[in-house]
Amino acid sequence: MCNPRRVRVRASSRLTRMWQEELRRTGRASAEVAGEATLREEFGTLLGAPARRAFEDALGADTRWTWQDGAYRLDMDGGTVVYHLDTGEIEMTARLSDVVTAEAEVTRTLQGTVDVNTTAEHTARYYDDSWAGLSKSVAERTARAQAQERADRDAAEQVAREEEQERLAGRRRLAGQRDEIDAEARAEAERRAAAEAERRREELERDAEAQLRDARTGFLRPVHEVLAVAYRDAIVAYAREHGVQDIQVDDTDGTLNIQFEMEA
Image (cartoon, rainbow, N blue to C red; front, top):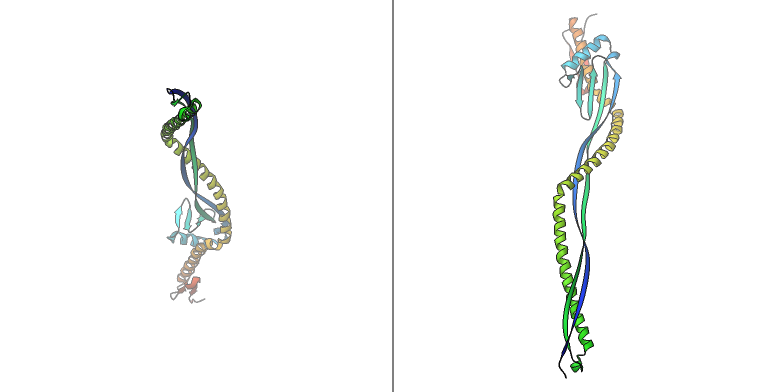
């Protein structure tokens, strides 16, 4: 065995790591939509003048009907009935409504790359006579392995630190854009809601047309009820003008019966 010698080996390590941060925000919007269909028919002009006057007087006395813009209006479940005093027309409108909703998601992404280079050194002993197996080649291999291990470890630690720092900075930047992203998501949701509302409106208008055709009798029922009252009042008034006192009126079960006797 002779005096030990030393060998120093330097090793390097390079690591590249990509990172990505994203912020997702959801916008929601809703819109009320309505579709309607209208049908106008002659009515007052089909009545005799006295009957029409009696009908219009009965409309004015019926608290269910309101006077608005030169016409009598009755709001019903699913629509309206309007009697136009000037033309004598009945206008029936079926109305359907709905609420549409829409969502939109906006994602904002930030990404980057962290690139680090590290170096490390390690020293190992050896003997010229390779005492205890410590030859120069063995010492170089040992020193190289130790130096590389340390360089790799330092690179991993450094790249992790820098990645975390960049991620935190990215999150802060995204947080500062949150209001902008929220506004973008809301705007897109409103655009989608408007498009869906238009599509739904067309559907509702078709459905309202079908409902108006199928429910025409129901829309005219309150009109006929007023007309029956008008006929009743006209007949009763006529009978009393001619001295009739014993007048019996029965309007149960939707049928109007008027009984009285008068001399010819």
